[in-house]
Length: 448
Image 1 (tube, rainbow, N blue to C red):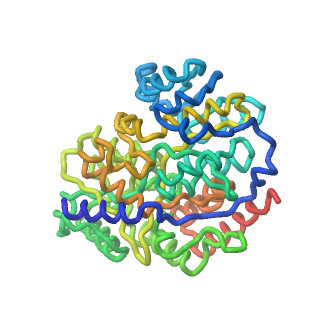
Image 2: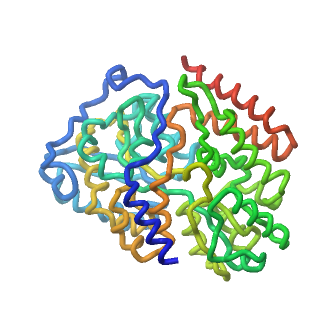
């Protein structure tokens, strides 16, 4: 185990910044966008960490964070860490507002406020929301400010915040998707508990062995169609969501081969128990794994933390996702972004620069999160936890979801319904996916 982890860490260190980048979108360039308040950064000497004291910024800032980041109120790690910034910048008044995470509870709430000319100065945004908000011209571009800072972060996290050449977010925490597996169930099924599957064929064989042994083999967020788990398989086979001309291309030969492999495992092979096909939350997936309804699943750090809290009474392990032509997994995490309506963008940038600096790595330790910074390996919780080390190593192969403002529409309204038709209605995979691609192209051209 130790040797495999060290190998993964070395691979991560060698691959830092070598992330696959997606591009596209229909947003106007920053020069064409509605002119925001000035975001000129402080000088290099004045920016970052405790040096933010010299920036001379002032004004009131409202900062939205996910509720979990504010569970202890004014004693929450992000609040207490900010005291050093306040001491150095007494003319900046900061208010944290906890908001429930979610597309409807968080993203739509901010979007409505910002479109109305209001909203908070800064929000912690899911990385997949950044291009959508940028395309709507609701965020201040921070390309100049990030010019000397972007190399501090894993490359994929910068890609996730970049639209049409401009950077709109500062990565804060990052996540990768890895394989969770039940070692006891592996052993009972005649599988080597210390040799998790590394290829598609090995994964398929392990799933069938678990099923034949009377176990639920694989769990997923089936209530969403499984598209979240499908993306890595799709990428690993050379699939791309868009063709070079910007049209939907997920039904290319490479893409269809991956889609058929993934969906046939669920339908023809039946590796997922019926219950797993309705799970829509990490709570359900973690509970299903912890109570041994399933022996394998794909998950991120939130899955890990929930398992730690559930304390399952069996031995389990983690590993990089099985791969095929290339290694790939889904990037998760959050970015700090500045509302285009902010009256105090200089103060907003100074605080973001401070909170995302190496000096504040310990905040992510307190939240049991992995930093988006390349020096995440220096986090105390990462150094002491072999599972987190696997997550950090996997970041070298993590890819942001397609960086186009229409991605959530394509995912929710095109791909997920197609998967549902196949899984629950027995629809032909090619037919369902062809219909999805037509709908996706309509979504891509709707705003033109």
